Image 1: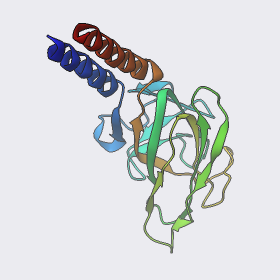
Image 2 (image 1 turned 180 degrees about the vertical axis):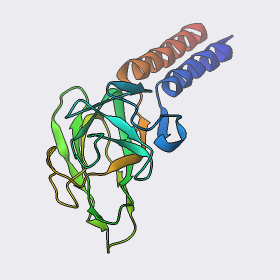
Image 3 (image 1 turned 30 degrees about the vertical axis):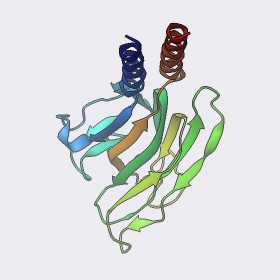
Image 4 (image 1 turned 45 degrees about the horizontal axis):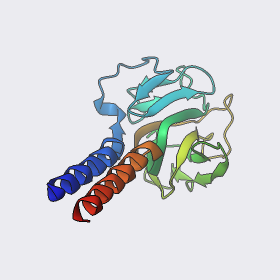
Length: 200
């Protein structure tokens, strides 16, 4: 009986953590969007996507991804808000059109909205092949971010400027929320208390 209680509560602890954690990865070219489809306010898992210009859309050209300014060339920022804290973020962006490109990602802390920092790519594309770049950020407890697609490799970009790019892929890990951890700790504490009580 003692043993089964410990096993049961340990399983609840693990299941609580697993249910609230994991990795999300999106390749926008495989998600069935149509060219020009409006994605403003789209939710994928714990992430909600909006944009500086209010016209986040899917582009089948330029590497198949999401960006702003459907009359191609605008470079408004993309905003991503997370319902749970996330970490280990990855972004692939570019346009394959032969010009210079660059992008930057600014992160804000989950719960406090404190600025965590900005990570930027080098200039790529054009003569500096390849045409797409993957930026990996080893951060944790991220609550929201701003993705700046730049203007023909110039950062920070402006929404009225030309030479933006699309996000073709995004990935991140979802961090267990404190409630799941608390549930697990309470389960293990209760199991230990019951085990001790039965042995005395």
